[in-house]
Image 1 (cartoon, helix red, strand yellow):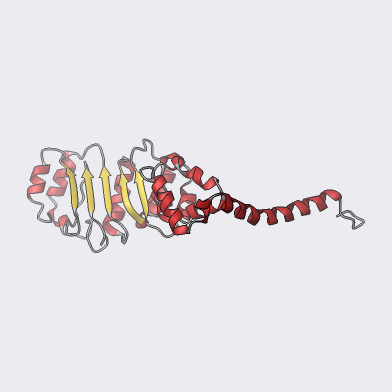
Image 2 (image 1 turned 60 degrees about the vertical axis):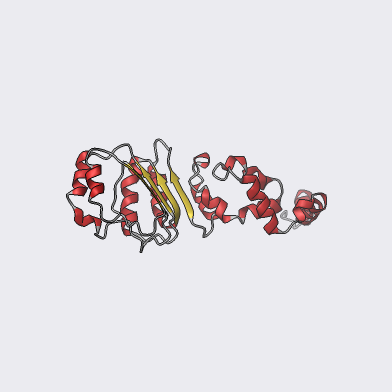
Length: 239
C-alpha cells in the first residue's frame, strides 16, 4: 500500500496468485486421484504397498525417499509410517538429519545403529546416548560408544529394547581377569537384567563383556577373546 492508500498492481496480483494457489491445491489432489486409482485406495492399503516397495531397503532411505515427492497424499501416508522413520534415525545416508528423522519417528521405538561409522562424532554419540532409552535395537562397534552405552544399559530402564549388539576389537587379558576376580559383579546391580529390559531377546557381545541376565534371551552370540575367557565362562553361573 502506498502513502496515498492505493494498492500497487504487483500487490494485487500477488494476493490473487496466493488465492489461486489455495484453490488449486485441493483441485490438484482430486485430479491426481482421478488419474491414479492407486491414490484412491484406503490409507492402510497404501501403507502395505509402500512397505512392499521398501522391503529389503528399509535401512537405505535414499532408495525410497523419492516416493514422498510424487504427490502430497503419498507424502502424508509416508510421514505417518513412524516405524519406518524409527529404523533410519541414525542412517549414515542422512548424516546431520537425526533430529528431523527422530521427529518423524513419533513415539515409535528407534533403531540405534552406529556400526561401520569409522570416526563417530561426539555430537552423534551424545544424541544417541540421550535417546538410548527409546532404543528397540542398539548396536555399535565404535570404541568411543561402548563404555557410555554399557553404563546406561547397566543402570537405565529400556522398555522397548529387543536387541543389543556390541562389538570392539579386543578385550585385554587384564580386563577379563578383572571381571573373573570380581564374581560379585555377576549378581550385582551393574548388569544387564530382565527387570529393566523386559523385551530383550537378542544379545551379541564381541570383544566386550558385561554381566547379564539370560532369562529373557532367545539368542546369545558371545565371541571368546583371550585365554582367560574359557575360565570365565566355566564360572558364569548366571548363564
